[in-house]
Length: 256
Image 1 (cartoon, rainbow, N blue to C red):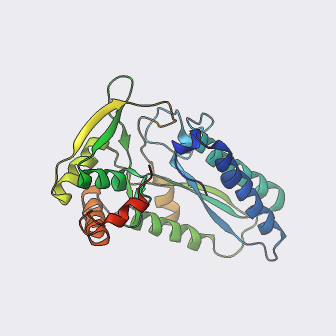
Image 2 (tube, rainbow, N blue to C red; image 1 turned 120 degrees about the vertical axis):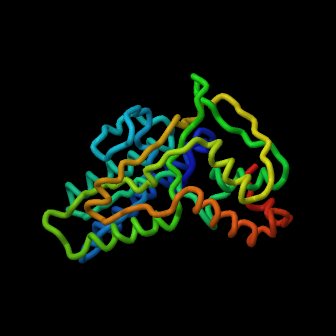
């Protein structure tokens, strides 16, 4: 899959090719297999788009995507529903909320901010039109893995009719981006240069907040890693991997 909200505005065709055409190709293969495989796939919290009611629930309408990326992930869910209806394929979508942790994507906030802090470069922290800061429901990778494995295990033997399910997997504790930077400063032992700028028109939303009650009741999902503990673990890995952020090879992993 092609991930990331902002880059989708630069190269939308690659997102369509990967996230929509690619997902359809997978479903086409699945429908021909016997027995028909049961599928768990990655959706995204971005499908909630311009919704203002929080926390976000699976019962909420998701018909107002704020980004091209969100539109492709919503398309995944619609395709999954259609293939479930026509071909009886069991399909479970997981709406991941701002995943972070060791070996994460370099363009995500925790990783890119850590890089800039170690290099003495400014961090761009976005503010909404009213001056408020963005809030994100940062979710540690171990909790995401636990929820994903639970979703795979839940499918079990074939059910009739084949289920179509969507679950939120988040930390249910949104915080401001500045608080994330505070924690990075604490564990990296360096101060950040903060540059507060208006939110660009690339599809980012002001806040995300997961209601995980459905995943809790049906999957036994319960996030257990606080942001403080998760960032501590991330920085511990980061320092070991990048030798305190001074490894010259890290340039290969930082998007320009």
